[in-house]
Image 1 (cartoon, one colour):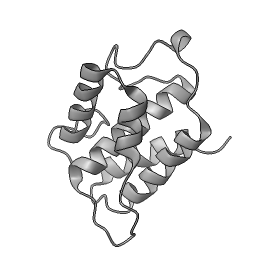
Image 2 (cartoon, rainbow, N blue to C red; image 1 turned 60 degrees about the horizontal axis):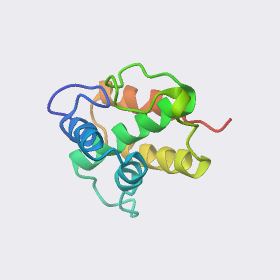
Image 3 (cartoon, rainbow, N blue to C red; image 1 turned 120 degrees about the horizontal axis):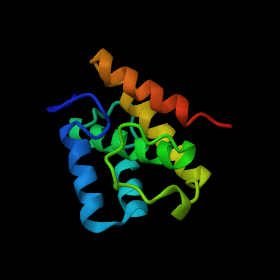
Image 4 (cartoon, rainbow, N blue to C red; image 1 turned 90 degrees about the horizontal axis):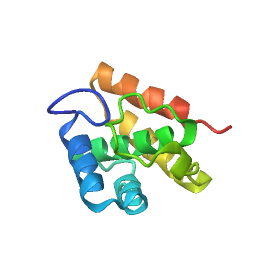
Length: 123
């Protein structure tokens, strides 16, 4: 599930998502778009869609808990310039990760998704 690496931003889809964010600066729109996955449980996700969802969920997690480990420098607004994401966005990220984890055959990618899910757990 990734052409480059197992980090949220080191896969092909994750890298493209980060590049789009750098180009547009529209974090809210890109997060919403990446986390809006097909609804049906039987729908197999395209690998790049799943990778973009993981990257967006990683951005949401970083904004929520302040841990920017693995997030490319300058990708997200400075902590003092942004508040935490709305809880509905956090819930959307959790739901997207739940869809992704069920379709991840690679153990390293599954571990990444599970760590992100834990970071997005309800408080």
